Image (cartoon, rainbow, N blue to C red; front, top):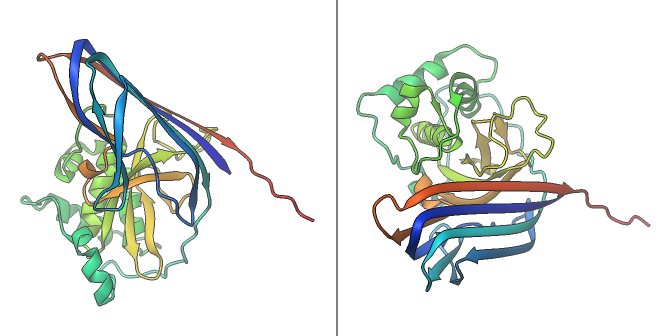
Length: 292
């Protein structure tokens, strides 16, 4: 299946402002489960682009601007071919399961195993213990934590910048997709897993899946966990998805703020920015092959 993605980010200002450099993470990497067929970026006002790979291997474009403007609009167009990837079925394990990573894997994975948030009041640890203590046929701690977030936390679109700390998400019992993913990541790290944050898109063109809580027309975020024998496996606690081909990966990072699709600055009076809008359109076309 080929997917046509159009992602438009628009900032509007009360008057002309001068833009600082903007880091754009809008181009995915080719892999066995996803191939890039075409890509383009259009920016207003005009900008020069410098391309590089960051420390995670993500493709990054840094846009620099010469002209002030009262609007900044960044349009990314992608044509992708997404393939399903099915990890091997994992055997049921006890709630105290700790993954066994080889010594070489552990060296590489250590940053993704290292906690990035504190749990001074023990709220997160208590929640993990509560979830894993519940009776259930599925003893996989990853699936149990993801399902607990899906069933026990509300989903809400947040346009504010930043990601909630896990403790705040636990207190509110709700969050955006990035907040729920971050809670899951910091929870499974406390069980000894390597986990990373993923930004991208969720494709469901018909929007007919009742379990899909993510808002149509916006970017999406989820987690990847390094599972022995399977490698990096996608877990989307917002929608209770695992290794699902409807997840379109763009950027990965140890922490959410390293995987923002658009990040930059401007110089202008206080209160100059009056609006921010993000729109994502994804359309699918079926691909066919000739058979002799």
